[in-house]
Length: 219
Image 1 (tube, helix red, strand yellow):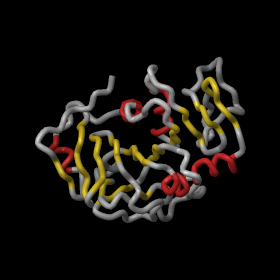
Image 2 (cartoon, rainbow, N blue to C red):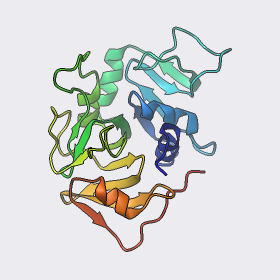
Image 3 (cartoon, rainbow, N blue to C red):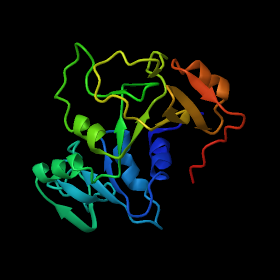
Image 4 (cartoon, one colour):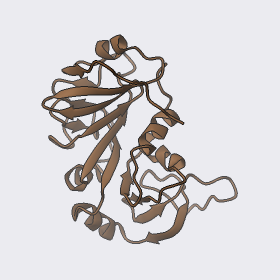
């Protein structure tokens, strides 16, 4: 079966390594803060000016002044720092973020991402996405494999306005984990119970499938 939003976030958190500085984008990526393994220390950065973001608060912990870039209330971990958004973007642009996790509308076989605008839809602006795809050392995209109409979001070439070009290294969807290289999507893992045939059917861009594609381990 396809993964839930929380399950996608759980799989994302398995990418974290001890000592990493990680930026989490709005949506599914922010959920990953709830699943950081207990045996590692990761500094989560929010581009509005928080380094050391913790998991979402319970009712007793809610502080209306402690928010992430998506204006959701969050907590701060031990050793967190709060600073201006200008300093936060200097950290991003200076290449001090090990990787960022972003949502997307589309990705393509060249590693390009469209994540900020759908024509004729009301938008608030690009936010920090362009800085993140240009400044982070590695970029992981989280998304559903297909849209609500069943159309693939993994394409030969993006059709929507681009956020970044040739920058995506890994994609984690509700169906699969894929790497982007050599102008193709390389299938690395599949969601438990999801067949390779379904992933092939819902991937419009060139897909490379190895002989053995294991199921994801989420717990």
